[in-house]
Length: 286
Image (cartoon, rainbow, N blue to C red; front, side, top):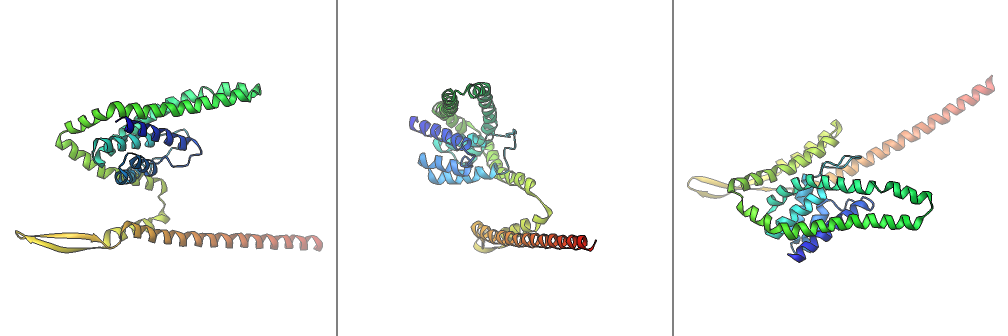
């Protein structure tokens, strides 16, 4: 358990580092949870959980000072508990959502502490004391990282057994409800993203993708038992193939828009030249 706690602490600190240093988006669940699964010895589970958690938080973005939930912290802890205690994806999702909301409070508290150091930074700048400025910057940065490392380390070291006991204690109907919620939440994440991006001009592409996934399948009878025919459904097009078709359509649309923009710019330049010629002729005519 000590090794797992060290790994989770390291991944939490790393995620906050890449999130702070340039907003690389490497702290998104699809990457950081896959890395966590690799380090914990569950690479396949890490990739699957990362992809599912990314779907849930796909429409969850931080705009300005608004931070709806700390998706990084919630995804790491939810996936870590699920992999360590040997539970499935439903447990990861059930834990990730509330932990992400609690993570927002922690992150806001950490930012309040960091922001309170701004007057001291300004004082060092006014006094041209750049060495003190650098020391204070490194102190607050590594203090921030250390706090998140200790958070991941202590939570896993102390809470893994408690979470395992709690999951085993849950009644069957609660676990069934968690399964239903785990199935619905990715759809909610996609709906949040679609709400931000929705335009009438994009509607045909949306329904085209739905049609490719919903209609291109076949059914075949596999077994007849007690008068009941068991059928097996299989999709002709996989999600990767549909995504490839979507990429081609997107490329065609982008190239078409670029050509249209070039034509508009060329037409505007020609109109400007014509207007300039008209003005010069009018000047000499007078």
